[in-house]
Structure formats: structure tokens, C-alpha cells
Amino acid sequence: VAANASNKIAAVDLKTGTLAALIDTAKLPHPGRGANFVHPKYGPVWATGHLGAEVVTLISTPSDDKKYAKYKQYNWKVVQEMKHVPGNLFVKTHPVSKHFWADAAQNPDKELAESVAVWSMDDLSKPKKVINVFKDSGLPETKATRRAVHPEYSAEGSEVWISLWGGKAD
Image (cartoon, rainbow, N blue to C red; front, side, top):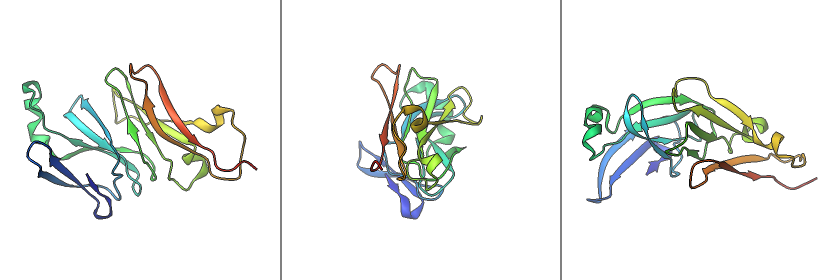
């Protein structure tokens, strides 16, 4: 749960219905679903983007699986902030994918709002690749800001689908 105006993430234990942790984050975390994956250095993590900060935040999460016990010291801590741009709504990865995706749909810069960022899961500290989805879409130019939003994987993880908000045609 994101308390975005407070720049905090509230982690709720769904088994007990109690607050597990309250984690300070960068400005305006987005209360979307986020993305869960196993980080090579920090073990199980949850990722969330931010409307008001130039990062995607990775928070270590606990696991009942004994193979992740060695990561316990990181639980409920921000373990990495990946450089991004403000205006992010959705982040996504898939268990079989080697990529991590983030949009910037609410960014006021037209070029950034039309684009998505992609990181290599092998090393999330390396710079992202930015893909302007609208330029490659073949859709007509408009005066309105167009937005690439919500990357989503196919069930088997072989494709990523991105919604395009086009605004009114001229």
C-alpha cells in the first residue's frame, strides 16, 4: 500500500491483517501493483515507481522459503533505487524475462510520456534503454500529449504489450 503524499510504503501482512512495516521512499510512490522478483544481490524484492521522483524503488520482502533466509537483514528496506524519470505509473517484469519495464505516462515531457524504459535484469544498476513506443507505432501525430502506459507481459512471458493513449486526432 502506498501512502504517496507521505512518501511512504505501508507493507501489510495479509495473514494477520497487521502493519508489517512502514518504509520511507522517494517522492510520491505510485500505489499500483508494482513488480515482484528475485534480485541477484538482495533476494526477493518488490518494485514501485514514483510520480514525483526520478527513481524506481526496490524494497526487500521477506520469504518463508529457507533458500532466501540469507537476505533477511534487508527485509522491508529500500535496497536499490534505479534511475528513471518522474511520472511513472506501472512497472513490470516476468519470471522468464530478462527485462524490467517502466512507463513514464504522467511525465509532462511529451517525448518521455510516449516512451517506456527497459533495464536488463542481469544488472539493474546499468543504464536503461528508452523506447519511444509512439514513434514506432505508426499512429498519426497529434498536438495532444500521447502516452505509453502499463507494460504487461503475455502469460508465457514472450511478449510485452503497452497501452497507447493517443489523445484527440487533429
